[in-house]
Length: 198
Image (cartoon, rainbow, N blue to C red; front, side, top):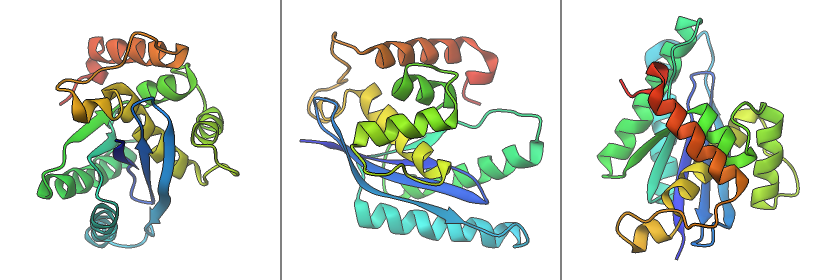
């Protein structure tokens, strides 16, 4: 039995969406991937509506077990952070309407999970996502790869399919270097004020 995760890399201009099935042995299979785009000259309400309708369609079509969303951090560009947070809210609300659990993961956690390096660049994440999923070509743009990385990260963190069949399912003792790095990144995020949930 596999765990189906819908990952979302939120954003107003480009919102990456990816769905993966992850088996108990942590092998991952691509189900679907895409990017929802909105124009900067559109009003905020219309941009959020486009994202909301797209997320509804993806949730209804692919019926994930859980939704994984990138956790928003404070950055220097406040307008970018606000847009990302607003897009995240639309996704979280859509999942809540369906009674789906939502998991938030920091970029550092995701990078550590898929590459073993919490400071890895976008190209490194894209390469590893391509390898993990056995794809012939890397998913583009980077927002699409990031959404898949979020989905993979959550499934690995929760123990994959075992999380559905065992209460409190967790990773086994034979962790890879990337999985150990993820645990370290998660611990650091919890210790840092910027990594705490608001």
